[in-house]
Image 1: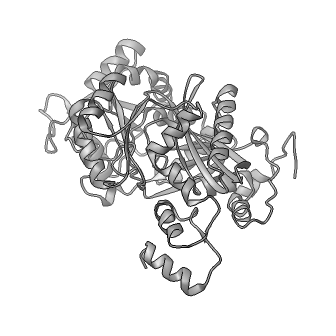
Image 2: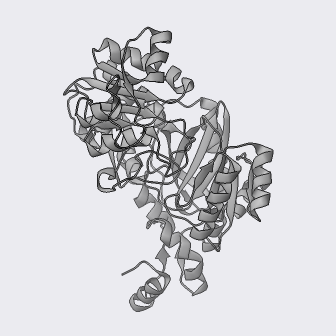
Image 3: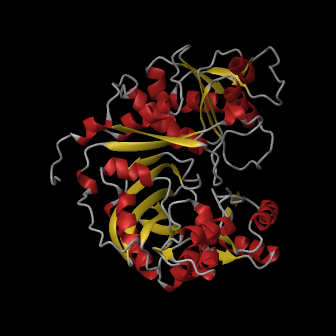
Length: 473
């Protein structure tokens, strides 16, 4: 049956249950929590009123302002003109954020006023009866996941993970590293302080997830979900303690006892990587953004983040560039090219045959003295080159390329046909491995340079048995 208010109430009445837990079924149960409460159902855990305070973008942002907790500049939509004025005041890009939506539906990053007005129309169509908030989008920030269990507003246990990709990639599509490996101590302190204050204000009982962004030592809150997030199972596996069992005891009033956990004393790393079905979605652009596109996830463990990252990539059906030992690079901006310069040097020293589109090849020749085979970008889906220069599209379709690293500048409109899209789509269609994020590209090159491609698969039990200094069960 459909997970609807009517079906839930039917089951509630027929079974004569003592209450409903709405925090382990994703977004839909949270959306109907207020209606269940209005119809006399007992909500176990966090109250329906406080769930609405967290889900309603305007109410949540108001609460953060009153608590003096930092967040990106925001404005609730009253008209397109007022949204445009707000964006002009804080500067583009801005993020359009509907309330009560699943997987970031209709969430968009607007780079100019035309995009903003178009995206607002989409957001209103998806969430017509709920507030739509426009916030300043922070470029180059790190996104942080805070998963926790609370009881009557007090946090019992928590875990802090970090996204490998910068903020702007949906958490379901992001590569998440747990425990976080590269956060400042002061950043962690702010995250814990803000999370404790939010848990108390919303009187949270049960599981919850807060997403933060950090740039330098400035920490800002993105959103709070009063439910078990998709990272909850990975947290439980990694920390060897069942967070959802603890949350259930809290929601049922059974005097939950916190687990003894020290995040700094865990001597292994878990990396969660997304899985996509772009091969089955004809014409879909295989890029990452604020709206979720993945259809699954895998997690792997390693002695360090690089080992766990590469194993997770392989588990997600990524193929190493071994057949031809050839890699095609097409990186849009000098900023990203500079960031990947050391990685290119590593790949070159490992003996990979490097191809590059004209701008990318010229940059690395001029700045790093690294030679690449120059290929031309396709102007359309049938462009196989002029015969004078090798065609990127032809090399991909001829199976001469093992891996395409294509990083766009992020300014093209969703659905726009660009040379980057044509290359990415061809890579998916012809079974060529694809990396579209600069942080992932850097991590991949570093992992290969450290010989993590020559790993031995291990059972999770092997990591649990690593001696831990500082605490024990």
